[in-house]
Length: 373
Ligand code: SF4
Image (tube, rainbow, N blue to C red; front, side, top):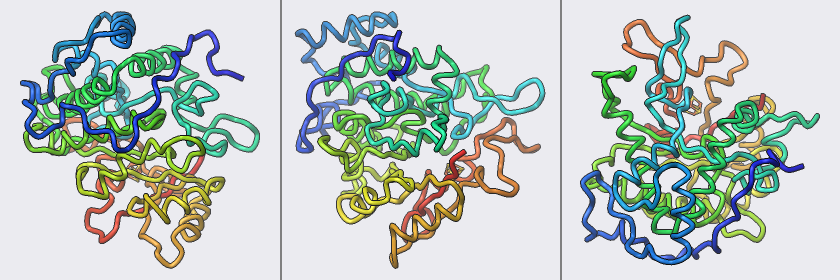
């Protein structure tokens, strides 16, 4: 059954470019970088595709995105707050942390398999439903429980799909830059006013996944630009868990980012092969080939099951691994907390950082285990 059938779905974009697609102008070494740190949108803006872009973006009052301010405004609409991942959280009246409205550290597109309107072509049934059919994917549950969120992420996808490849790179770069700015340039009313974040990070795909290779290539190119000192945001780290690999009939959306990590173009990114008990063979094939350098993130029913899957996948070449501290069976850590000495609350990921810097202090990046709820 289709998801939210009353919401018209935007058709998927043009065929994805091949892996050999040259990087758009914005990332060429000699390309002037704009005053906000990312280049201007491509000049090839005429024609039917851009007419569609203008119509789609106008629904958000942005019109035909041409100026840097346009791209900044659009980037803001593509960023979400994420309490667990954020280095800054607000505090509710009862003292509990709440997601900051001003610090946006996550991208989020519609979750779930494409057959249900989502952007997760590599989704397994296990990752979003339990044996009784109950929804277990936290992102999909949030989208369905909060219709405004579902509508927002649908609009994001429609706007993204209406862009040319060069525009996608520009928007992805603007998204990275805005995520960096909200952390390092706190506004006067932000929870971290006067306390800029010193290690900014962005989680790609807090909801949804890389749904086509054009999207994977756009983020790979934007992240490569972000890694350059002249970008002004080379201290931004990005991380993602993706199942967009080893798909039948679809060029791997994760491929461009995985290749960029392998060849050193993306020193600012940690990408995990997301897996679970139902897709061990697919992950094993991935580790035997193009993705041998990536860590694995396993979703399982218990920590022991997750460890057993890693044993199976890695064999004698087992990496060290960590159980996400929020999934510990005993004394799990809260997803956000505020220490008495701290001026504001923080999400657990920016304290733990196991997924943000998986190779820090280790000869090989850590694998990670999550427990399905
Ligand atoms: S292991 Fe650490 S960094 Fe990774 S998701 Fe859990 S808390 Fe966040």
